[in-house]
Image: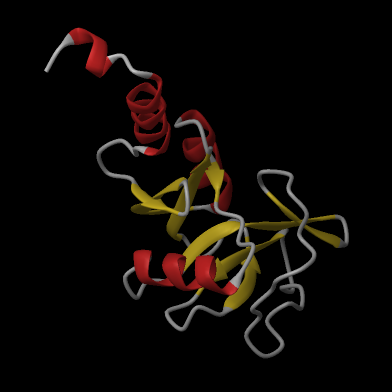
Length: 145
């Protein structure tokens, strides 16, 4: 194989796409984004800081396929995702639009009695609102490309 063959535009474009969508060790690729389970249990806020430090955010979920992928990635654990309430509006940690797809468990979108509410995904893939500080649980980070 010659140098000219390796530097052809088609191969170069293929290599750029492969590098751009490759996830680092410990992250899993899904539809062009990288996801990681933070298996240590902590608060929503600490998990969010850790995700931002790693170049991502707690996961925002935009559709049923992504919801199912995240449910499987959580491996049967209840895990924080990026939804939280600021005032009386639900928002995603990555500042993307919250409205559109949702998968609330029955009555789960109601606010907890105390503390700021954050969202976790349960082992069935349904969303539940909890106080951001309690209980500690795992979380799902995402890096979007």
